[in-house]
Length: 136
Ligand SMILES: O=C(CO)COP(=O)(O)O
Image 1 (cartoon, rainbow, N blue to C red):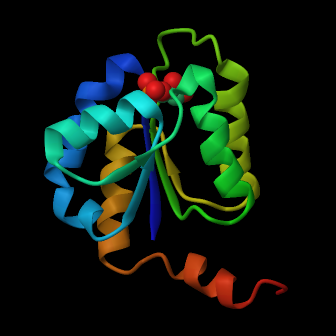
Image 2 (image 1 turned 90 degrees about the vertical axis):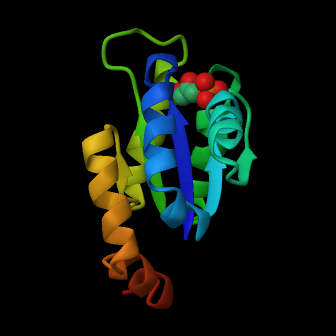
């Protein structure tokens, strides 16, 4: 499964906590991230992550491009609901695309935990099923 990790600045410590706690699960998957998030998580955990541009420089859109091509299975996006971001349209576009393509997306650590445990427990049948039956 392909997993994207994205965290706004004041959520990066939370993302590192999450990635450290769920390193075993994350390590079994293909990981992608926006630039700064990916670099910080790699440095803290040793996980291998494909890093895109930093969010304000197009990283959210690069991940959105994978979503639009059905190349992303799960997104953990720890966004900061208390601080305005210069690239708010990109953020909204990514969340919208996740819904367009029925991709599970967590925007806080509590939901992220449930999704990662669900992934580990094999609860993501819809993604596998939809790949096999693209026209139904
Ligand atoms: O801004 C972001 C997501 O919208 C995150 O980008 P960075 O991981 O580069 O900080």
